[in-house]
Amino acid sequence: MRNEAGVIAVLFGSLFLATVDNQLLIPLLPTLNGEFGIPIGQLGWLFSLYALSAAVFNLLIGPLTDRYGRVPFLLFGLLTFVGISLLMTQTRSFADLLGLRALAGLAGGMLSTCTAGLVGDLFSYERRGRVMGFVLSSYFVALILGIPLGSWIGSSFGWRNIFWFSAGGGVLLLLLSSLVWKRGGSLKRDSKVEVPFRLRDLLASRSTASGLVISFLVSGGTLAFLTFISGHLSEGFELSAVQISSVFLVAGLAAGVASPISGWLSDRWTKRRVFLLSNTILVLPLVLLDRLGCGVLLFSSLFLISLCIAFRQTALQTLQTELVPMPQRGTYLAIRNTFSQLGISASVFLAGFLYGDFGYGAVTWLAAALTVTASLVLFFLVPEPGRTEDSR
Image (cartoon, rainbow, N blue to C red; front, side):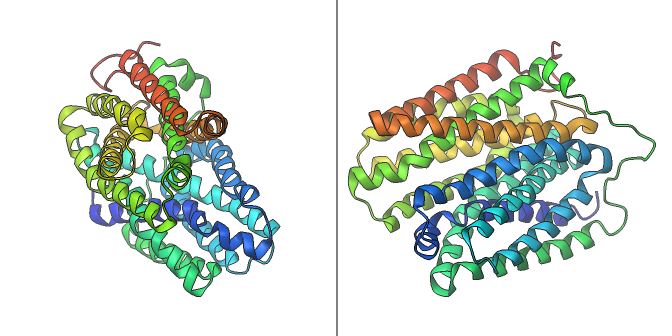
């Protein structure tokens, strides 16, 4: 494949922009509260609407990328991202902000689905883990670099001005994409090929249906404990926002380093084994997280948790790209993203009640239970692609 480095750069950058955009307003909620007079609890609707929009739109966009090719939709997603970012600089009301965040969810869902699908389309399964690991490290680079930088820009120059930089990043990626796929690299489908959308077939297969359940479980378990850890550290140890951000910085650094390594290891040792090992190890630090106090043990535990999450995520997403043939890959990955968003919504909702009634320890046990269940589902129901015939 020509321009391989350029392709990987476009995929990395697209996922980085989508991740930063998704999380950018989290540290700026107090600023939005002061400007619009909306309680912080209601400002959470911005993120719920973003996730719901991405989940619903994924169901529509996945089959279209299978039929017409993923690159055109990746470019359209980047163009939409630029347009929405420019509109965000002119926001004047909370209603405008809500509407634009819903549209941003459409663009983010499109970029996420196309990115994963293109990694599956362009790279052989034997070396796909390494590429997926590098591309997925954009999540953690966003956590380490994008979010703190955005917070600084917002504090110094106003939160709307952050989106001028987002729009600029989208334009640069569009220009790079035009160079990468300038000569027939759009992966368009043959116009004579019919690609049927058979959701029933995807759900009837034991491995593909199990893959969706696993996405629901791992995403839900991760966001359940992450959502309430700031409250736990603030209320339990009176840490400031800066001190709490240092905790996430350490976690992001650990995961950012581990993600490319996990891809290399997945290619050598099989994706299934890497997922099972890292996901199972993850259970222990999760259940101990609320008992470690605030010091070296806490940072060490979060470091290990981040390593495990990075290893399992790379292995899982690479494995999922091979559970269906290429003509149905976009559809399946889109449905997988929808299940992930539903898992986040359900688990965070339940974790909120547990946190209020029983404390953070109950939340970590919920996350651990979801994690263990994901390992069991994969162990019994999902073989390594190409090694064991999937029962249908």
